[in-house]
Figure 1 (cartoon, rainbow, N blue to C red):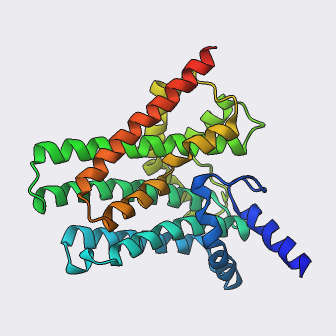
Figure 2 (cartoon, one colour):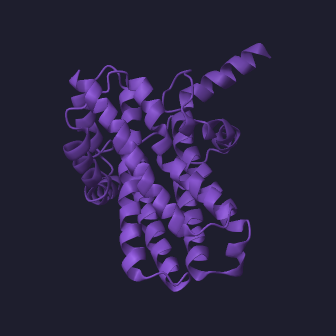
Length: 284
């Protein structure tokens, strides 16, 4: 029995982004809930990319309910669907690491799906604010645009600090370069795979990579994250999944989605304040 639990938790830690036993960041807590599902899916030999598409499907279903103002949207169903979308988004990477089926194609699918979902989410919120809540387009559209960029910039910083904490043998400059570079074709003999990598890299180039270049050029330039692990914990509150968990809370409270957009903008302000403190610390 002891050997079973030793192996169980050893496999669990291997399936996390850190790959070892560490004090979990706030954005890593859902891994503890998705781990049983990950083990079950691995037993069924389910490929992680299928989980990526399942997560996308739940995301589309949530957006359809949001835009259509279906009566079901005013129940607990949309929150449940969005929660499933989040948990499956955790499960795909966890399953890939646990089953040793990680690939650049899977990583690109995940990144592109997250970016497109975020873009469509704030577009849908803008539509709902104008059509359903009768809020002026002159207010709703600029606020949603600002909220969108606030979301992706803060989530990008969180992702970057995680990369730093899991690759401490690299310099910060090397990690930054790896973070914004194109994903290599890890199966060059597979022509279909190569085409998928190529087209997804194009989308990545004009989405997360563009945001990353702007972020590093304007905000993170000359900042030294001397303690990578501490930085990853601090900025983990800005992780992509954390934004969606907060959205669920707003929905459960039946609060206006406009307030969620204001929350995103205020969160960006807090993010800049954290970076300012790091900047001052770096100067010293």
